Figure 1 (cartoon, each protein chain N blue to C red):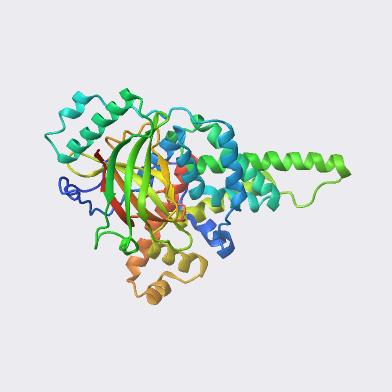
Figure 2 (cartoon, chains in turn purple, cyan):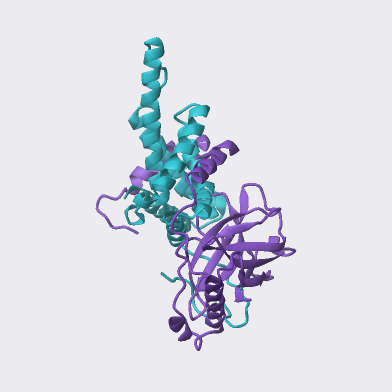
Length: 214
Length: 200
């Protein structure tokens, strides 16, 4: 928490809170045409730049192989990715994972769910393709969202990045954001995310699995 | 920054039972990074998260048609100018709200000029800059309130919206009086943090 001398004091926030009413808290949802217009304009701008994901040198990763099997799996991804890059093979499946539900830890909504994730190279970038998916419909005001998680050498969550919203009926493929090396962000996670404005992972995972080189 | 506790991922067993829990600011960092680096998927995720906030601010100050247009302009402008966003200076939500306020003011000025040309009369009910600022402030606080844990949010709503005293909230929720007071204090602290993130 900030200790800045110019920070808002509680009295100021309390005054605004007292002035809020139910209407003040309600957010309105824009009509679908708004997003369609944004998407159309962005597409008209052309493909975004900087989508090539740099792969780490083999030597650096080779040192990690003795530390964890996760690192070993990641190394396999790097190797196959490098092969795919040199052969110029587009849309090659570099790694894949069967995503699994973890009873007791995951959201019960995922109990009957199943899916596999494939890491592919396309147009110089990487994408996660969700295949063989049976995904649950989520409650109103919520979405399924895919994430890539980077575990550290001790198996902790070092970082994670959202890949975007997943349509249960048509999961399709999701771009791996530029700058996120899939050899490091090697765990695919699908979660239920309420539309509550909170960008953090909700903790409601339904499926998860680690990418392994094919 | 790593905040998860150690040893809970089961590396090697290919089972990851961890329920991912990270602070909002860390996850925001990831989303913001992907957005700035030009990932269209991140743009959609950002829109899903903040589209309602931006659109509501527009609707509270503009008519429906112009609110649609300005909401589009805000996200297109943010996307095209994403390199100018500096996470060190504030949150993405705060940056988007700032763009929105500016676009609304531009739109109102343009509409005023057109209206004067058309009829020579002042259009009715034009919000001032101060009013737009106040609406944005309230929406940001409402947004911060929505991010609070359910119990904290409920206690704050009972005290500030419904007007119950601390003692009455304690009685109605069966929580100790001290817990009610500390819950409110912590909740206000979290709201303040969100606002500071948006302000800087």
